[in-house]
Length: 198
Ligand SMILES: Nc1nc2c(c(=O)[nH]1)N[C@H]1C(S)=C(S)[C@@H](COP(=O)(O)O)O[C@H]1N2
Ligand SMILES: [Mo]
Image (cartoon, rainbow, N blue to C red; front, side):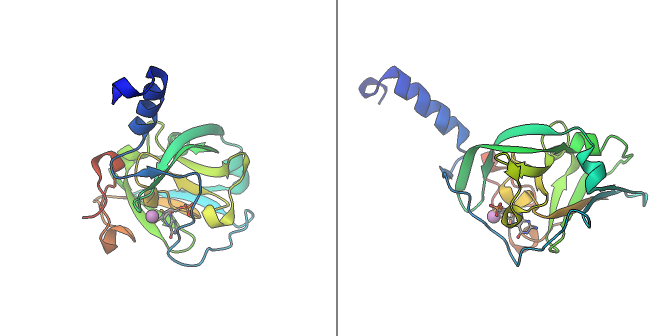
């Protein structure tokens, strides 16, 4: 193969392929995948909470959330239905920032959304610059269909972990399945290991 294509082309293809986890194909579209109707959450009613195993509740209003350090994120997203979207751009708040004041010894979390959706994510997958509460996509406020006003973004796991219309995170002592995980999806969901179904 290397002999019949130019070195430059080969290099480019390699880069692209390296970014696609096994069994995934790239798409330029941004499909909408929601289990039920999209909730209508006004920013004046919005909050993001983190509850600990000790019963402490941290919460940020939209205004308080917007006053936190905002960062631009560029990442690839991978849906378990086999599409990947490379080089997406987002803006939001790092979970590292949100967890700064949170005292916990829990290793697991359950994300809760305004539509009743839940998904479990280990805390270690949320910290260390790996996840955000994102409210902007491609320089525009996040569309309601894609989870606006804000969604969880955990791009290194399959996209079902990126809870749209996210309301908050509950720290839990043991790993328990969320919505899709109770319906046959993998508890963890690493696309590079093809942790699709359980
Ligand atoms: N609240 C909520 N979040 C959700 C879902 C959902 O039904 N409700 N679907 C999940 C699934 S299965 C996927 S693939 C992605 C789809 O996000 P998108 O519609 O922005 O492409 O959202 C995830 N987050
Ligand atoms: Mo999905």
